[in-house]
Length: 87
Image (tube, rainbow, N blue to C red; front, side, top):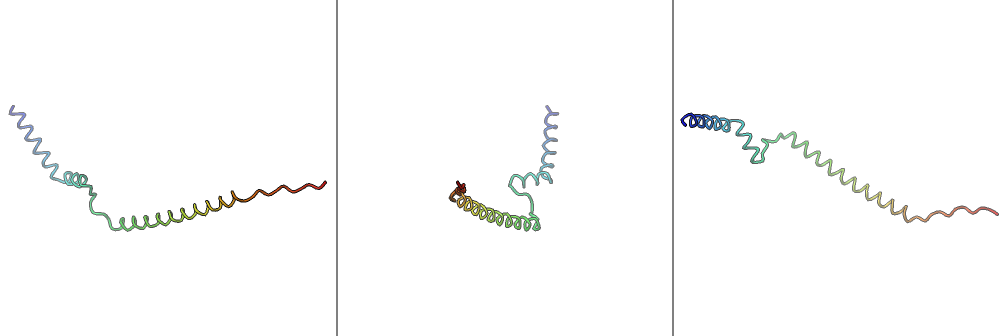
C-alpha cells in the first residue's frame, strides 16, 4: 500500500513538472487554438497570395461569361445551306 502511494506521488510530481514546462505550454496554445506569434513576412505573403487568387477568380469568371456568350452565338447561328449543283 505504501509503495502504491509513493509511486502515485512520484508519477504525479513528474507529470506536473512536464506539463508546467514547454510541453504544457505548447499543449495549452494548441487547446486555445493559437499557434504562436505569426511571422509578419508570412502574413504579408499570405495576404498577397489571397489578393492574387481573388484576381484570378475574377478573371476566370469573366472568361466563363465570354465563353458562354460565344457558345450562345454559335448555337443560334443558322446552318449554311449546301451549294446547289448545276443540272
